[in-house]
Length: 137
Image (cartoon, rainbow, N blue to C red; front, side):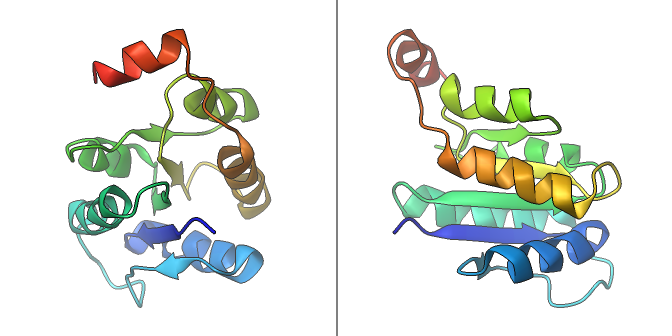
């Protein structure tokens, strides 16, 4: 079974905990409270775990999802996608082989977030012409 890591900052803390309760078997990398923290620290921590565990996935949550995506994508072998709809979530896996989904707690509710995560985790990379492009990243 592939490992799934999750982390947030203070603005994504509540959604992170809701996801953990609903999906279980997710490895929580923090934070342990909703006290103010710096999202780049948690994006880096999770990105290192995903990069060193072949075939694993990550879930990062902040207020908008954007900061986490920017910070995570600074790390080698990471393709973090800010997901907000079923279509862009599916395409992030089909065409970009994204290995981290980022979400914004201030922008989507927990039911939509869980639905997007399920799509993300169940969608396979198409490969083919997309593989050539992903290798250029």
